Length: 141
Image (cartoon, rainbow, N blue to C red; front, top):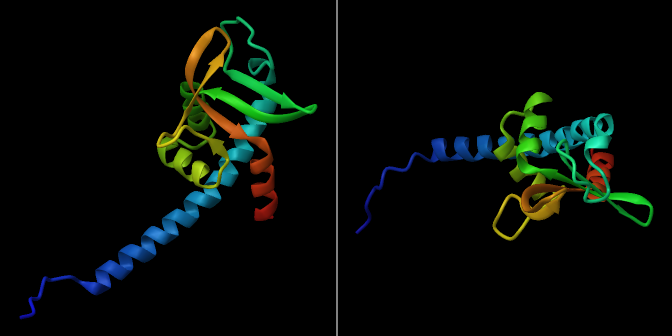
């Protein structure tokens, strides 16, 4: 006995095409967002010291390995604020897209990490992996 369960195949195909397109846009947007964030980082580098400075105007910290910038650790709320200011208000989707491209390092099953920043222990942060971002931006060109 066969039942007609009423699936509209055409609508399902349209949905899948739309979803795929949105994912591709999200991936492209993550590269653009990472580039723009790095521009903001360069303008405000003093707010990202490479030591655990006890200052009230700390946005995150710079991680230097072998004389090179390896990671940028950004307080989560500051990341949301910066991304909104530079034209990326949907940070939840953006963070997911950046995580999929391995631009950010996250705790398992989370879209953030926890690190000590300034005098804040286990702060909720976004950790940007600079080598992956640079590699992703080069692959887009």
